[in-house]
Length: 506
Image (cartoon, rainbow, N blue to C red):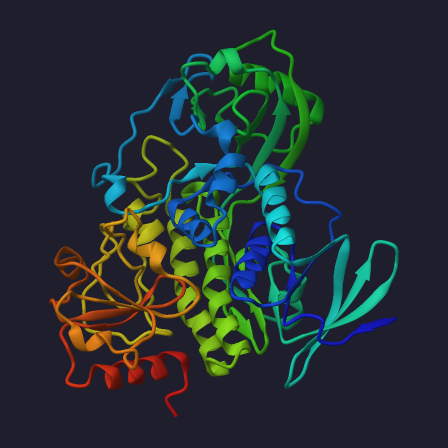
């Protein structure tokens, strides 16, 4: 057995979208990482495809949004929803939202995209490797032990080589079945299994069939073959999902597909048939000592809100800056407690919202399956508010009935265009950032805060402060503290807030 002592500050177990994103976020904060993935390669299945605007904001922050958009180019024009008795006779559905379609430019600098998981994972893998990540595919974490100073993991390569690696912390991004979560004995809660379904991944040249009616999802209202088609590359690769006769013999699927397609003579090649169970399972704890759960290891949810992978990537982003600060001595280790405090309620709420949304594309944003009130879809993506954690709360109100980002601590900083065309979100790097109004001259002292941006009065109105007020923003673009007006001693007030946030107040 080989021994590799303190080769990495953080060990990531799992090389899917969440694990690879965690490696990129940690590298952004200068944290040495090792990622191990038992599979030899990235996922061969398309699986997740929708990369929402919040995730794209995070990719934009670390400078990889253009790479992701390039990988998503095949589906750039396949954003619409459609429905009909067959794919050949389907029509596009009008795009509507309960509160109306927003002016996207006023709420985000980023654009959502569709990028199949088997296309996006290799892109993230190449980017993480280029940025110095130690990525080891074909390596399984078979055991781990924790002590007061770190974690020792036993790693086994495909050739049978066994190695022990020492790290300060471990991120378990090892999927819904998460051996690490099970080993830790962390139970899960939620609505449980919500039915049965099957994904039939197939190849067929449908480019002419869908020309002029390109779609993301196409609902098939057909008693003989009900379900939905999803575009993987918009031309040759497709997924058909159905909850009817999910255990039928493999030889029957080409006929079922032709019925749903409405193109009897088309050549169809079934690539894989993957049964699955939509369900809601959320870990009761996201942290156990030096080990953190992220992605499906922490929360499993149905795909109806397209939120599973996005929520997991956002878990990793939340955790990365906290690990970075703790490992370089800029924060107390207690800061890491805020990971569970912040992300667990979000995971629970998002998973529940995903569970009660109907699969009917015509009704999914306005009607739940059991009467549970639905959050506004844009609020679910951008507008959640942490209930407790690494911020100084105030008594401000907040709602999920609409996008409500008005400077409340625990919410994402509102997007605001500045004079050079950048977004206020573009001003957030790897440290805390102070935004002040134009009348807050005392904030200009380096003693107040070294990273400061003076904003205009329209920005002040957006975040609920007067000309002399300020907001402190964390590296993950979340507002940590707000001064509605100038404190008597701004530098002291700010120091007190920072010490409270990062756990160094004592």
